[in-house]
Length: 498
Image 1 (tube, one colour):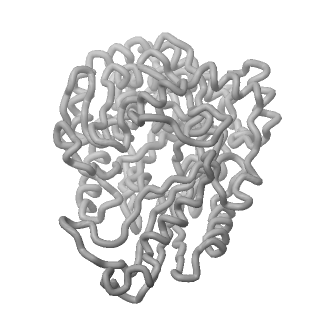
Image 2 (image 1 turned 135 degrees about the vertical axis):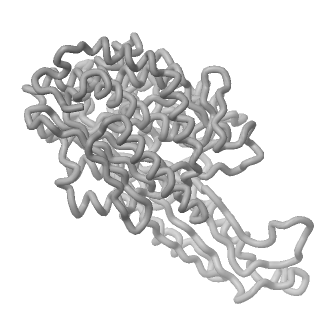
Image 3 (image 1 turned 180 degrees about the horizontal axis):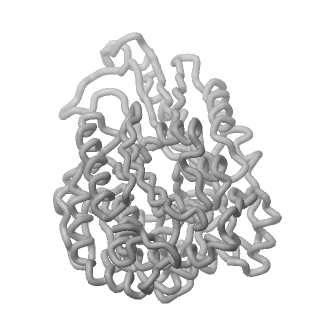
């Protein structure tokens, strides 16, 4: 269908586009089920062909909805699926980002149904990747389809960038963005890979923590030793590793690495009061985890501990014999995987430097400690909430969900977001559609289908609003895409600009 010139919906209304989406809801769900069948696990090499097949399916689907330019861009890793509709220079250009790779499904025995056999259970679609992030990026694809099938055009210019490596740190997309930023040029970026508070309470995420992943290996003897012959004479690397790890936090949950908190920027009392008003309570967070009791840095709520304060987690540990029965050995080595979550002011490489120095200082002379770095690092981000794109998202949410969204900090990290902010100098709208109980990264991950349907409506409304605001929108280059000024934060919350 040849794009029509003129208004954003010549001869049609947004209501007709919304009606199309409502009528196609069952088909949208069926197509999403096809999408989540692919075990596109980027972290596991034996699923490489599955990731490739998923990318091809996604590219074909983008063509089927009517996007005229679709490319499968090869990288040293997994493909980047790129599509665009850019017919009107006078219209704003919005970059829509998402990822089609998913987390490993382990432990498989914890799933009620197979992770890659999508199952409808009540109002939920249960499958790995249903919420993170296939269902969320599919929201925008279905919004694009709804416009193209009813009006033959979009109210804005759109670029879609969907990658297959987000769960392993986005190495090749980051490289492409660094080498060819002109390919991603846009007036705003929309990312849907975050949570809202509930099916009737939308939320816009305005801050993400940064991340750093490291591995600590402790080596002892040159080979495994008989624990009867050498137990009590040789320091066990598993024990030494546990002693080092146990010393990384004090009794109050604070990280003991010297200098770790020196660059953490303070958060105003006004912002903390707002967070307390709109965020999850300690009771809610504890209930969602299923843990018997809370733990962590004193003086902060659980919501604050997971958003405005940094964290260090041991995400995996290995060493010695773990098979059935017993094996009487002192293993030659043990290792642990560590994940830091960082807040504004902290830089991943500086934190790595401090950690290496600390480990070298506290490691006993009876073992050798080796720290291995990782490319999985991302800076923390705080987004300017006053940009026009944010206001359009607020209105779109209100019309689709019937309530004004709240603004939330997230404890998670989306590596590409900080890169988009730095490189494109454009606002990033973190417009999520996942629920707190969607079990992202856990067994029995799900997507709430009524929220998915509302999400499609919200995306349609967002595109229409941005198109109608084109005269004041096009050419805006927000100088505060990433805000690190605590005075800005304090003023924004004190003035009620949320």
